[in-house]
Image (cartoon, rainbow, N blue to C red):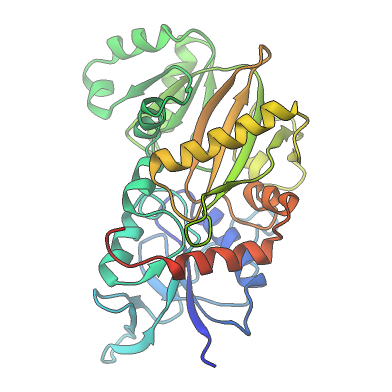
Length: 364
């Protein structure tokens, strides 16, 4: 029997390039090679697509972040039937065959934000994860919160700092933010993996934090600090017409001395711990699972997501954000939540590929 041909795509031209590689390395290490023929495709920081190595660990080594090696043949996916075209220098472009499904282990702008999803829709190839609209809304935290709020889900107070407003009317923007109270958290509106995030407790710190966030994205989100525990829950699309299912919730604990769950806490060894299942009253855990599914459906997600909450000392649940392509190493939060729920990482990878294969092409 012919194996299903899966292109694992990773990298990208954004600050989450290395995070993508780490997740792809985990997927490549567990994907069932008897069932799937794997084509690893790396997207370099400059946007070039290349045939990548299949045997690298793509892990952080000696503190150095991994990066796509561009020595392989350049690739393109033209509109049509999902065929891959190799573009070797000096040679005529040649087809290396179509793929049945793409697993885009990608994060951030020009990747997780609907752009690669749109490219794959145009190419006529199925892919793992949410479609164009859900991916775009999930990536832009301002629109994401608007959609969640319109669905009746509780979100915390925030202010959007648009590029033009910051450049032309900074005084008004700062005054609006001060009404949130101190401290605040400042983050790029369209980035993930805690890149560019700062905590600000004074007006001086706030301006510095906004400029830091703007290094990643000209659009910035400033959120009121919400005291409480950080609880996360993963959602997985059901097979066929089954409804989405939620994992057991887990609690994120920062153990490396950081003030909040930043990039180092997420991806460097011994910087965080996940208590799963979280120590919560049963009715609170069930409410989190129900709210996570509501958030998933409000955005129109497909495949998978991770939904993050704050559980406040007075017993309230505040939905912080939804991630349509969460960190995906075997030790990332979402895979650990599913492992604790009874779906080990290799089976999760297989399930996501099968979900993508069952999905029709085009509008759905």
